[in-house]
Length: 88
Image (cartoon, rainbow, N blue to C red; front, side, top):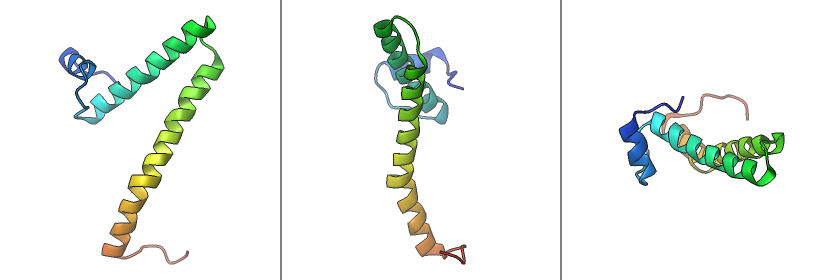
């Protein structure tokens, strides 16, 4: 959960980069919350479409991080240490 102390919240609010998983979660949560607030104000109320959009963006960001950073890292480790799969 994105519950961090008030000094960390102030530091992140001032533009500092997250320094822990909790701070990263908080920063992402604040971005999503701001998006949902703006969408709700524009539409007059929260709608399923707003939630679906936010969740879709988070999923795509996750997949892109995996594709661009995690998968190449794993490929390097396969080369270094040897594969564990006998198929493929």
